Amino acid sequence: MDIRIPRGTQDILPGTSEKWQWIEGKVHEICRRFNYAEIRTPIFEQTELFQRGVGDTTDIVQKEMYTFTDRGGRSLTLRPEGTASVVRSYVENKLYGSATQPEKLYYIGPMFRYERPQSGRMRQFFQFGVEAIGSDDPAIDAEVIAMAMEFYNELGLKGLKLVLNSLGDQDSRKAHRDALIAHFKPHIHEFCSDCQDRLEKNPLRILDCKKDRDHPLMDNAPSILDYLNEQSRQYFAAVQRLLDNMDIPYEVDSGLVRGLDYYNNTAFEIMIEGEGFGAITTLMGGGRYNGLVEEMGGPESHGIGFALSIERLLMALEAQKVDLPVKKGLDCYLVALGEQPSEEAAVLLTELRRAGISADKDYVNKKIKGQFKAADRLQASYTAVLGEDELQKGIINVKSMASGEQKEVPLKEFTHYIRGKMEEEK
Image (tube, rainbow, N blue to C red; front, side, top):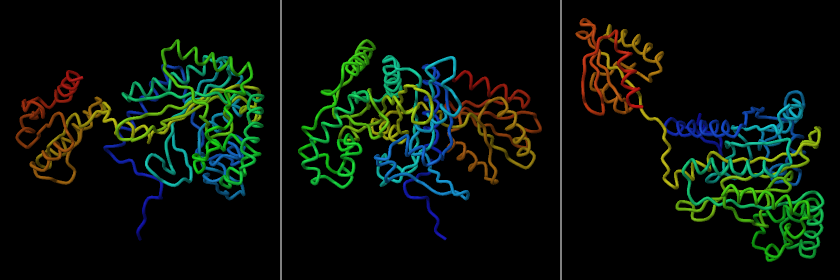
């Protein structure tokens, strides 16, 4: 039987998983500084949640969701994105009643979309996202954007570009919608079937079409910025002013259209250009979603958030040759020679590990040369040799793999000695 991993998924093996762990630690650390608390939602939800929350006209809902019927006849879907689930939880658990508003949340975990697998785009992928729900202050928009930029900057990425747009409030979007329909309708037969279907339902999505991106009508399509009412213009101006004051550079791009129906007002993406990509690549995106909480049955609550791909982040770090400060190697490897020394080594391992020291030993009866090779492969800082003679004398021979220095250490002091050495090297 030839059983292989499902297409569009990946095994994250030792040697790579440590990078994931380090990045996840960085996620938790930056969210702590910005006062965002972690939320964990189910991997599958009722299908209707994504139909209503993400939007019936999106590619996600129309083509990419993993949907199945459970034994109770319920339609369930593996989550394709995080915002809808977070908003559902916000409403269901009445987080809008919390004394501290906005509710500032973050998540990190797997998402699922049935897409054509390619570099940086998987069918199971991992996202880090934040949601700030319960405020319509432009300052929270600026904070969320600043948090995303800070995250990438602290990882050492270069060539970042922040792109902003405003999709306007409901009145502005309606005026823009009417203008888009009038613009595209006379030639809609020249566009793909998806665009033809979206003309009346959500013409803004035509601007995000990958098939027809080079059609001449795309270049002179009505700009949303020309249809913003005074309130929307002032809001967008306030966000830009705050970013200017924070010394965060950005570009305004009226063609920026997020791929989810729930966005309005502020929309943004962070892109990267540099060696290894060949062109500008989008690393993450986000925006404001006034009205989504009400769609889920909650009270009027305004929100904003972003989501980024961990896989795409790792690609960017690799392309720019950014070395993450991932701790490599064991603190100590025990070389045991003989049955009794091997049993004693098992006890010593327990003591080392209880003291917070990473340690290991041989379990397949390798000769002394093979055990030393194993210590090298595991990049052990120290190798400790325990044979019959050492055991009788109550000592263990400790060698620094960096300097080659060797020292006989009493067995009773061994753990204390190694712990002291590791603290010196911090």
